[in-house]
Amino acid sequence: MTVLDTRQRDTTLRELQNTNFDLAIIGGGITGAGILREASLRGLSVALLEAEDFASGTSSKSTKLVHGGIRYLAMGHFHVVREASLERKRVNELAPHLAEPQWLMLPAGNLMEFFKYRAGVSVYEQLGQVESRDLHVNLSGESLAAREPLLDTKRYSRACVYREYLTDDARLVLANIRAGVQSGGVALNRARVSGVIKADGRLRALHVRCGVSGEEIVVNCKGAINAAGPWVESVCDLDGLRSEKPLVLSKGVHIVIPHNLLPLKQMVLMVGRDNRPVFAIPRGEVVYIGTTDTRYEQPADLWPEVKRSELEYLFVPIRDYFGVELKLEDCISTWAGLRPLIAQRGKSTKEISRKDEIWISKSGLITIAGGKLTGYRKMAEETVDTAVRFLQLSPDDEPEDIPLPGGDFTGDVEEQVSRLQLQYPMEESAALRLFRLYGSEAWDVMALNPEPVSDGVSIVTGELIWAIKQEGATTLEDIIYRRTRAAFYRPLEVADIIEPASVVAAAILNWSEDQRIAEAESVRARFQADSEIR
Ligand SMILES: Cc1cc2nc3c(=O)[nH]c(=O)nc-3n(C[C@H](O)[C@H](O)[C@H](O)COP(=O)(O)OP(=O)(O)OC[C@H]3O[C@@H](n4cnc5c(N)ncnc54)[C@H](O)[C@@H]3O)c2cc1C
Image (cartoon, rainbow, N blue to C red; front, side):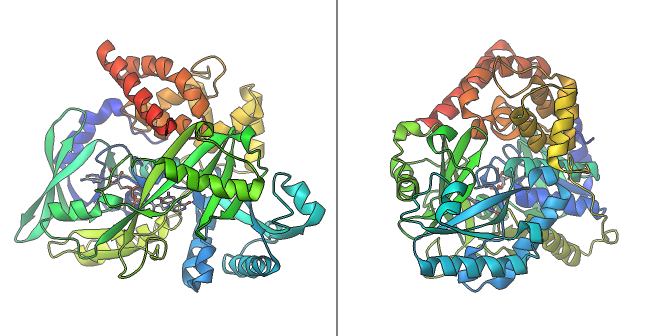
């Protein structure tokens, strides 16, 4: 069991202050989290500093697919597809609870489109070494109507259905950070890097400000890695040098609707009016739909504004494919994230490659940007290799690839869910939700307190305690948005859990009554902003 105990922040701050680290990582999204795990497994001394909460940037707002990016086949990027499809297998091995194999339907409006999909999927499966039980099926007529009764089969008379993996982005980040800490790394959220200290022109330490106590500390390191996602340029600015590779930000919006408004049986990939892919993903009691891809001209923001026109853009394919007319008030929640893309002259955000790049500034700041959630492990390997070479570090030999926390179980997920239900009687959907979020640690969570946070909700009190004592949650928003994921997949429960969850958190974290009320108000305001786009 690994510990990121919020009550021990002071001890972590002292450790950060008193160690000369091989590497300091700036940014606790999936890129930084993967690097922390990789570097710690190789025996390097490493610290990760996150300005806000772990995964509070893009890494909690993706489509949550660990996928090979089939659309890159059309661009001829075979190596990207091959690498990504092999990586999704690796994630499934390391954390089977966080990589759920799901069928994804590609409905085709004409024969040409169908042949294109079928050929693409076949190549995709070969590149990704897909096992025979997971190979695609081609459907038409009655078999298609039975498979997805909602689909307008007059308009989309054929489909290809193939396997992709669904993850939980924020929990994948947490699992990697906790794995890094388990292997000796140090990680702190609400620890903003505010400056760089150099000696003889080389980066030697970072100024860090604790967002909870306000304390300023200096973290000494042989080298630093800038993994700040959409903020990499502002971290380059701290280094006093402009980023060598300018970034372009692209905003992607998702909407969340109740499952009963669009009761899909599987994930569906549609084509939007501008030829962009739009996913509809059923997840428990909701379906989320996304995403848009528009250039974001403002400075990077944790909560990019969601516009009415973006919701309306996402309604169009739902009407085209399923004949369902969505309205603004059907959206019970939304989220928007920023893709940090490396600018390519003359290309729109839709055309820019999602490939990651690593570069080193004159002072030795190593920056990694671009890339996808899916490729995070490989990106981490390459970044640590670069750091080891450049800083002449002495890592251990090839690390043993141990499962991520919660991923150390045998047998399939269904078996584990039945076991959990046997010990803690509850509905299958509730047990499945817990197991998907916590894996084998679901038992530890339940042992803390198996009671629902409020009558009729699926979130249990043990999750709140676990979030604070094991996963570094410092605010109520951390708990509701990025630990229990209630705001994303259980939006209808959010109103009921804010008050009781704030009471539990206040008791553990010694919040005053004023602070407790402020925390609850802040989450209410955040959630209202996400759900009331008018
Ligand atoms: C809408 C959308 C859908 C997507 N869907 C998918 C998908 O389905 N599959 C897939 O593989 N990829 C997907 N992606 C891409 C993927 O989500 C991103 O590539 C990935 O999350 C980027 O992670 P990151 O760690 O680089 O950035 P982030 O997650 O943004 O992390 C950067 C972190 O750095 C921190 N930071 C910034 N400045 C400082 C500082 N001064 N000090 C300390 N910390 C700092 C920030 O607070 C932030 O937490 C999607 C992206 C978007 C936008």
